Length: 596
Image (cartoon, rainbow, N blue to C red):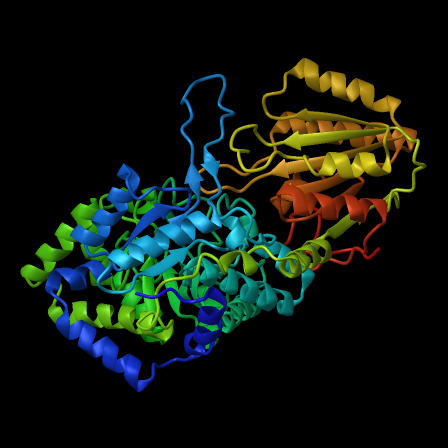
């Protein structure tokens, strides 16, 4: 099998990926491949296993495990994740981080080796919501979806998606588990939050559709998630079972609006969620295992005939309902084509095979899913070329032009929702003393990037006489009191407030002692007339917990790029024009924002 240049591959498949049908040669390949498959090989096409994108040697247990998925379960594809490091599970010190990013060349090398071992080309997917850099180091990382919503410019979403598609194809990834089409209208949502474009269904739909079109233009495929809508929940389905209790009329006006818009934009796949929807199915089954939701609502009512992919089957929202084997069978019975990341691939394969043998899953039903999967692979051009050129990859991943697009999104997203003392931009002489407070929700899980690592040097570059202090939910009462007492000594206070909405964390909150400190500083600086500005990173809803703060900026994102954008806005080095894409109860309405 010959290698093809990544650039040529992306160019050649861009048109194919945008088409709703395949050409005659590709259709012939689909029918001939299906006819030549054994039942086991057909079943395997419905399974997508997970591999990491850190270095894996060909003579290693990890590579043997991945190869076994191809050899023994005949899997139809893989989902590529980042990496992980072992950490002690200990009390008192819980600050160890485990998550790491993958590497582009390692990912491409692994994908090529697995592709070479597979009889049928593999469909490779990844969770690239924020671009390829969301999982792979060195690739372009874009701000969270809510930051795009704050810009109000769908063209930025389109451009980011084109870049994400091209980078992914250069690595060998075809199917993006993006965009998020959830309408985040629940401030207590611990897992969607900034992953949503906002709270306005029509605007979310417009941005999701733009992302779908951008991915197609770049030669990749889009997956809408999390159907039928995970935005108005307060349970993380990684940790438990969530429900949406709205009547059908509400669903039509809110949750389903973005999915309809993005399906009309020719989305290739839809991911079903591990949440209940009583208005459509009152059995207590999650959408993943519900024919009424997947076959009925998605396929019949929304007229979607692309790939239906389950959310990860290792999440508590479904493991609490069924074993790995039974869950795989029920997911296919419900109408899903791809069973994603089963916690026991062998059990999932065995369960599906038994279901086919005893007639629970008919051959026609099996063939329908396999045909959809093969057609998707043909549209991507994988029947002609499945490998990527490692020598070409560095020319297309992590370019300066792509970084400029990400910088533009980040800068335009910054939203000033309050400035009652008119202190933004901060007009201080260079020799002024500044107290910088890095206020962190909790210290664990910051393995990829430490909070304020870019904010501090950017602030000190402008005001060298800056004292930096970090406090979190582990700060003692005495430490918080010390910060409060010393604040009066400074000419200005700048706070960076970090509140994450992270999958499987189960929380998205600003601890009460830290919120109280911000309120106290707001009162004391009002008396002294000292500037006090707070920039919020991550969940914007945290700002509603401290409405007393006189100047509030929102970035909707975390890490270096957002921090640099915030400092530039505070210092007056960049315009501020973002608009709030959600409502903050008691603080600001949807669409709020001051210009500077």
